[in-house]
Every structure is written in structure tokens, then in C-alpha cells.
Amino acid sequence: SKHHGGAFLQMPRTHLMSVAATVQYQMRKHASLLQAVLTPSERRAATAFAQAPQDYFDAAPTFKQSYAPQSGEIFGILRQMKETFESNLSASQ
Image (cartoon, rainbow, N blue to C red; front, top):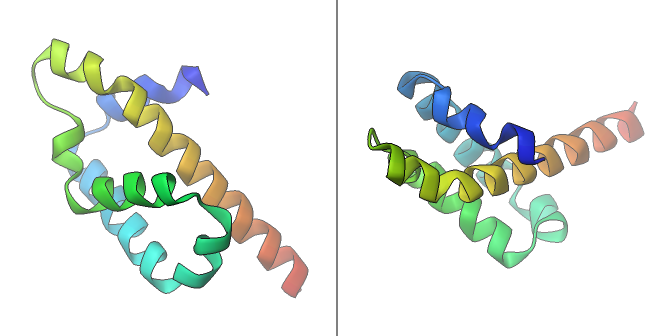
């Protein structure tokens, strides 16, 4: 949602790196599942974020503001991945 875009900007860099590592791990582990869930552009955005999260954010406010839409896109992708994982977990129990 539009309200979460700034949250990534306020996240400590160590947490951001942890999120990126988790995204990268999950994208590899569940590649076939995510292929059916995420669009090619969403997969590219998530992969780009996982490989270089620091490229999405910088100390200069104008840079942060210009990348705020991308952080919102990443939040949407993460939400979609989480919902898919939860749905699959429920179905398997």
C-alpha cells in the first residue's frame, strides 16, 4: 500500500540487508512456485533488490524520494510472496 513505502527508508541498513538476504534465499528456494505467482517484472524487481538493496536507498533525501515507488513495489511483492507461502502452508496442513 502507499502507506508502507517510507518504512523501508527508515529501516536500519543491517535490517535492510537481512530482508534482502531473506528475499534472495526464498526466491531461490521457491523459484518454481514464485514463477507462477510473480510477474517477470516483479521477479526482476525482487531480484534486483535482493542483489543490491543499497541501490534502492541513499542518504540524500531526493534519492530516497525518487526510489520511494520502488520500495512500495518491493513491499507489494513481499506481501504477495507471504500470502502465497501462508496459503500453501494452510493447504498442506
